Length: 527
Image (cartoon, rainbow, N blue to C red):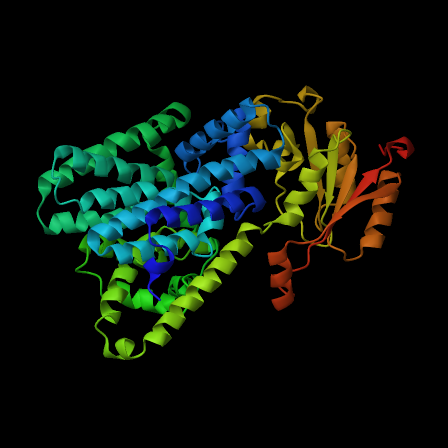
């Protein structure tokens, strides 16, 4: 079945993409990875509250100051309307990101239309619209995907042979710089443009791109670094040193990890077809081909690997892979003789991706960490919360979901996030600050009591992570607080977490969480 019989216009495909992203923006709660919450949303929230996270650190951040500033601006607009619920604020931010991510679908269509046929352009657009992880990650605060539209626009300008003006090359440099500002590694994708221009000896065009690029990043990176850290481009130097010195101390994997990631994420057997098509696509657009190759080779060779690092490559790989494969399949004797098999492969691809995209759009990621705190943020008598992770399951708590003006004691104690530039002593903290304490397998009850005494706080609620030894821990905590604990609410893991636990219970634990209210009138505080 030809694809344009199902979706015969880019407008229709954009509507499908929009629906999936609206669903994900509204229903895909939680956060995907550590960085999209703690290095974007948490920082942006702090800035809207006047807390200079990153600004008072000794070294510049390893993440995009520029992108976080834009997120803070959007968050300030949402808060200006009077919205204070942390989940609702995230939903609006996700909606902004979802609308922005439609540019990937639209630009993918336009690039393919320039390089190939309308049918291939529609196919590329549909893949980018419904590929199982694109709607979900498209609404999350992922620098890896936020950086893609400017770079796609740069390639779209590049392939416009009818325009060779200075403005074109300056605009290409600007777009590459914006992508670089959001995600440094995109320079390798843009490197394909540089290599082909050097090979073609287009020195004037190279100069215009470089001048525009440097001028732009001076404003987006250099000036903020100069103002807050004393040197222009200090963050680039810091990022380079961090990755060269600590690359082997972080999450590492072999050189073939990303090949497997791409083959899996694009869903076999179609993923293998697209990889085959990419391998035949050099002549379609050498700059795009070399950019994808440079990006892939660098990340495959670099020891530190996470799946999200490779995300920027997918739209470009899909464009070239689709064009290359369709050209090959239309001339292959085998595929011409077996059209039903080929159509079956694509039918399986479309069906599985649409189902998975819908599933991901309704998935509550990190529910065990987010849901209890958001629930407590809606309780009028909540001031202080204790998280009990003595049986595991407790990781860095997302204090943002406890509501505005919420503080993780561990961050305050370490002078993290710039809090102590505003409140040097515990007694300086405003009374309306919500405080979050934690206890795990390492911290003793005596240490926890010292923290309570220092901050002159006592928990209103205790959140227990996991069911292991729950009754014993409740009794032990009740004795420690010298107070009764009344059950308030429990949360089960999300659908995806349950599925992962079913297939691999040893690695993916079932993280049920239980909230208990501390009966204040029975408290006899320990000194």
